[in-house]
Each structure stands twice: as structure tokens, then as C-alpha cells.
Length: 243
Image (cartoon, rainbow, N blue to C red; front, side, top):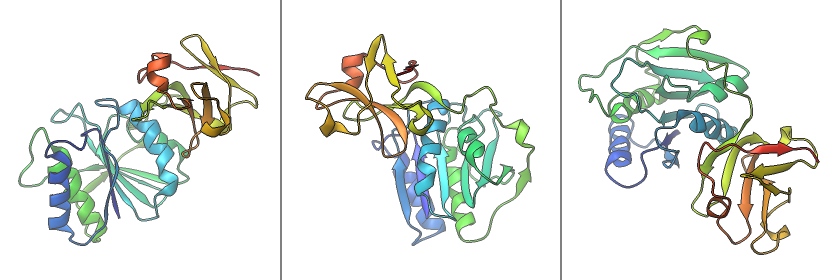
């Protein structure tokens, strides 16, 4: 299958155009809208989000990941093979956490160029055709890269910051819940939040954090909007407090 992970939003023609290209190149291939509301222009939050979603992707999946404020510049177009899954997208750190957690990985620059390449829409003209060709066993020209050329060693394994806010106002962080100390409390803008199992364990209006379905620490308010109540935006820091 092909999975799409972008900051395009579902409005406008962008996702539809990518899907039309995929259907033309590889009709019948399942195309999954994984996310289209990745924080706009933000490859670092996108990297932590993408890595948290990999576990549910079947082997052989091809992920087209486009969060690309540098589109049309000299930035490279990457094809990453990590644990038998392909990831296609820009060289801006978007695949850093996927690479870091993979047992096996190969990194390539996409050397192929289509006859038509819009300087502003590589998702449609470059990454989508490459994804389709990979799925049918006809990969285009790739150039093997040294891993050190594309890595972001200064990014932490767990990022104590807000990386995504969903439509309910729940705030995902770049922290894996499994790596936090037992009984840890999280603090956001000076307000401490206890750990609870899930929403039904909190009183109405109570702020707390819990391990979400992707394994990340998430801030929430039962029947309320945590982002508004805690005045949080993507990129703002979260503090880990010992029990």
C-alpha cells in the first residue's frame, strides 16, 4: 500500500492531484490518507509524528511524506528504506526518527527527474510517481548516500515539546510514555498534570496526561480543549517532573 503523510490539509486540489497521479501510474494500489494536517512547514514535529505511526505500517509499505518548505531549492529528494518500508520525501530531517529507530536502513537520493516537474509541487510530480514505480517493482535511479549526510544528531530521542494538536485540542508530545519515570508528572506553562490511564479516569474539566494509542505522552482535558486551556502551541516546551 501507499500511505500519504503531508501538511497539505484536505482542502484544495493537492491531495487529490497526488492520488490521481498514483492511480494513473499504479491503478488498484490502495492509497491511505495517513495524515494531511502535520504541522505546516514543520519537519521536526513531523519527524516525531511519523516515527510514532510506523509500527502499524505493513512491511513493503511505501510512505510519501511531504512537509517541504524548501521545495524547489537545492534540498535533496530522499528515498529511505527502513525495516522493509520505503519513505519518500525531502531531505529536511523528516525521516530522522524513523532512521534512528530502524534496525536496518538504507538512504538514497532520488536521481530520476520526470519530464514535468513543477518547482512548487514535488509531491505530485516526483514523490508520487516514484512511489508508484516502487510498488510495481520498477524503481527509478537512486544514488546511495552516507547516513551522516542526512542525519540530525542534535535532535533528541524524546522531544519534550508539543508536536501536534488534534481537533479536540489534545496535545501530543515528542515524549514516548514508556521512557518516562514511573509516576512522572508533566508540566505545561507552569501547570502540573498527573498521569491517568484514559479520559474516563478524569473528572470533567480535569487536565492530565496519558499514553496515547501511538505510545506518546499526550496532554488532555476531559471534555475540554487542552491546547486552549493550557495555552499551548506546537513547538512549546513540556517539562518532565519526577514523582
